[in-house]
Image (cartoon, rainbow, N blue to C red; front, side):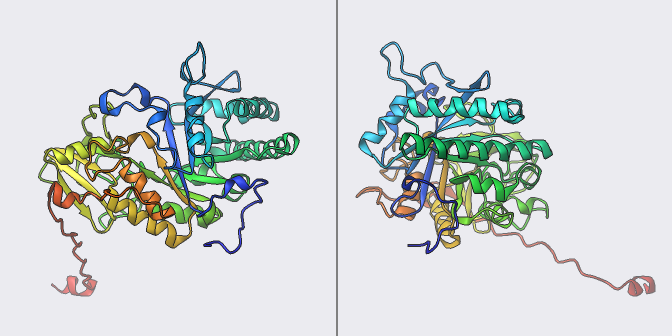
Length: 432
């Protein structure tokens, strides 16, 4: 076993550790049902053995209590709801754990501020959450507050997690069931982390930490940058050099998170830019904004992996970046930084080398889940590659990685070395 001793808080249940140790935690989004054609995704599209944990995004907050969001989350009028359809995956894989996430980017921060501001508000939420989760057969709760900020939030966030954990422990004793799991999605931006997270305290109450190790760069910037570089490129400014998967994970560890609790996020999507000049397409090249919206995900600056595959099969140029250990693709003035099987396998090796707890995926519904787009004769090429590397489960007899450098147009971009500034003594300049 890779862990001889565990420094984690005793979990009060054996359910949080799976056989081979590494977790594969997959977020499922309840709005993916509204995508069209090859993008349309339903719970039945999930391979029950693909992930160790599925996190249902997102629940909502009504009058300070945990509640559902989409009209078909709940089973009603004889129609089986999404919650139950996710639960049904456990029939095929009884070891699968499912959690409900509350929060997310569009949820905003005010509801969390209010809900955590007093003990009364926290307890109102907590004592609504336990029966809500139990009655719908969820195994836990994932807190996605984006993001606590300032000393009040920092303190209240810890109190919320502490009181949730204590209530979950007490309830498990009382009903003689495995304790509900408690996890959280956390940011990678140094300012966000230092401004809102008491890392040792946060880590002590969570079963594992979902590190959102993506969205490092995107359409909010005016130069191209990769969504999730394992390492920062040498062309980055000193400040930008902090923005990489490796730096983010080591920052959390440095601030007090146990390595084995860090589940490092992987993106099944890319972030796109429109180049200011299509001849200038390396990393950190000028961009006028986000790239064009994808046909299925319909959001500018963003493409699902299956949309990137379509682009690569339709004439885009593929470039592997040896410094960042991730690829990007260019088509005319469109630029996308994404992860493919090669970069994902490389990140899994890095997870094992560093002893992190596993991989998290945002999202299960943006991988090539039908196996009909990317090629390689495999459903879920990216998450399947994660599972192969971390859990030793093969993807299938005919599955093979797509080598985009051979399938797509490909150019090799040499790493431009910066000219070394030559220091001339002041005396020489004065004597000229």
